[in-house]
Image 1 (cartoon, one colour):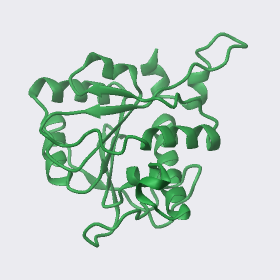
Image 2 (image 1 turned 180 degrees about the vertical axis):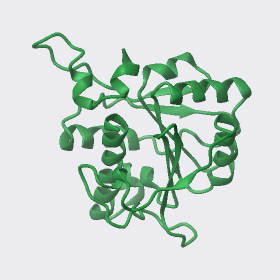
Image 3 (image 1 turned 135 degrees about the horizontal axis):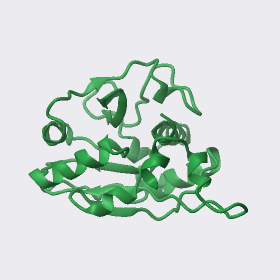
Image 4 (image 1 turned 90 degrees about the vertical axis):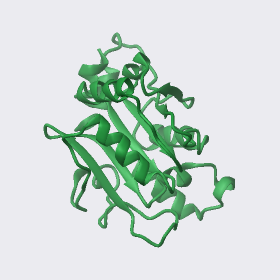
Length: 220
């Protein structure tokens, strides 16, 4: 059922319920990986993003998220998976194949650079799609022009090395299967305000971009 839904829209997900029934809650998932990197960083980010999407997009996300290992068959139960961290990422051959199958089948992966993950996650994803390269998405890409418009591409939420924020993608047969937000740190912006003490306008920018990613993932 979910594979069909992934190729349609959030509205289509609601239509799998019997007439008159409330839409079944969606659930976001956090990817748990090996290698020593802190995959568990930003524990309040996904609940806050889910709440924002429910308010702004009319979605029906459960505010609790699932934690899913890369090689688990349970991965296929979640149409949207988020990955973050600061350090090393290692996928076994079986894990890489499982993630590849998931993405080819219609799943969507958002990788968020929480500062330091870049050299490791690029190697790990090359194992998943050896034939693909991350390409920088232009500012005119639809992911930046969903519910909210970002005319200059991915917003800069946290300063790391003074580099510009960039949005990269892996495109499989014309479909964006993985969006990688680099040097932006959206997840930090999604966290509770007292965690990073970001100005409210910065947090809103991060949440709006997150909502765009969600909307695009379900509607492309």
